[in-house]
Image (cartoon, rainbow, N blue to C red; front, side, top):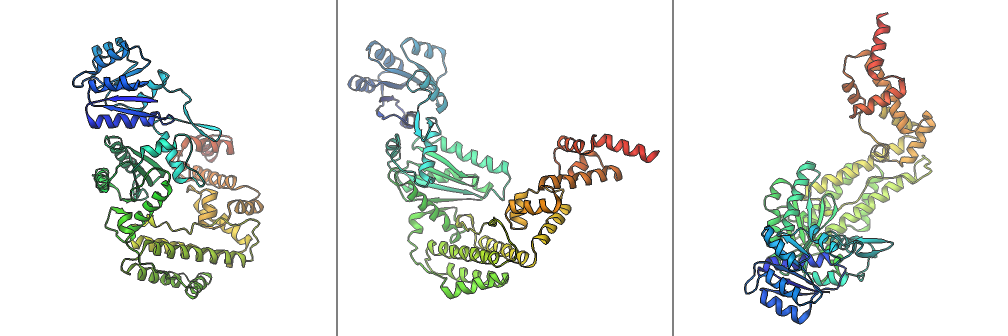
Amino acid sequence: MKVLIAEDEYCSRMNLIRQIKECLFHTTLEIFEAENGREAWDIFLGQHPELVLTDIRMPLLDGLELTEMISQSQLYTKVIIVSGFAEFEYAQRAMKYGAVGYLLKPIQEKELMNLLRQKEIIGEASGLEHGNEIMPITGTSVAARLKQLLTSTGEEFGREGDNILNEIFSSCYEILIWMNTECSSASLADSVKNSIMQRIRRQNDALCKAIELNHDLWVILTSYGTKEEVSEFVSRLLEGNSQQIDICIGISSIGHGVRNLQEYHKQAIYALSGRILYPEKKVLYFDELNNRMNYRNIWNPPKLKKLKTYLIAGEGEKAFSFIRISIQELLKIKDISIYSVIDALKMVEIVLNEAIFHIYQNSSTENAESPVLFSTHFELIHYSTEDGLMADIKEKISKMCNLASLIGEKDAENTVQMVIDYIRLNYNNDITLKDLAENVFFLNGSYLSHLLKIKTGKNYLTYLTEIRMEKAEELLRESEMTVTEIAGLCGYNDISKFIQVFKKYYGKTPKRYREDADTKDTI
């Protein structure tokens, strides 16, 4: 499809080209540019484009005159007028001369998409085949396809539209943004994300696409062609935001097309992982960190065996001290490669898992299913300082040692009694079976539920609710607290839900129950 963009302002023209490429992502495009109306007319006569987007105010020949000449040519071309002026006279004349639409700057992608569909330039079901689904071509479809190429195992380049993406990002950088959302309020994190997204949308000189990997990790793929341009762009993204929330950014080498997108992603992760070596830096570049080529392996078989022995014996302090000293010595080495740190943590993870399964294998508890265990994984990009990494290592070792103690000293009967005691003490907290099993008793959830059913004859939720109702009934009889206060003490933040459950158990509302109890006491 041939498209002509007539716009005398360079940045506006580049932005229009970007938006058309996104909206017509499924179509092979040939785009022509014109800086004035006369140049646009010459291109029109020579190329016969099917779609023309033209500004109104241009030198030599304005957009309305160009539209009228295109209409009189009797060639099948659809014209969209783009203007910064919301004047009825302009719109009226544009339609009179045969324009199919009139859009105001700055153009919203949704409005452009709707107009293209309405005038049958693209259809409602336009999209890329994705299995048995249709991926709609919208303002986010580019990001959706990029995320597939970035994260999906076995996702191959070569689907319809990928070559256009390759052309759009013929030179590109991946910018990997990590935000410390755990230490910030949800509203603040959302505010910072929105601020960053607004600044991305305001880019006129390059195409930028944001891809959310999880709540604290974002990828931005940008078509900037130089490190200086990327650096300036990142500075604008961080401006003001890094003061509100802890943000760190890793940037890949320059890439060429999206065929090797996963390789750029690995580079950006590598760069972001470098924050453990440069905790004071907010922005880290792969090209700079990649020069640190000093690789060391701190673990040999005897040291690993010693670490595993400490863990199996439940000697957590010795195990932690052994790991801490080894990693601290590694970080002091001049120009140490990030790969050395990553590999060192992988070995710690492996030994932790080996120790955990050794404990289960040699326990007297006969579990019908494999246990669901806490995560032993270390993702280096999440640690801004050495202290943060060490705190996580210590916590994982502590959990493992607690697990060893629990399994070594308690059989299934004692375990379920401990669960019952725990529920009776913590009934007012929001405790799910999954949390209880995985984070408190380190067991498989269905196995723990099975033990509780044998002991009490009830499933977990029924037993928890029964304990809560017993306590609520006691407080209604013996205290002067309000129904709302009692609901909160019994683990219910929703008062209507509490009343509903109480009535189901006792056949009357909490208020009526208290009134009847008071009457009986008076008699």
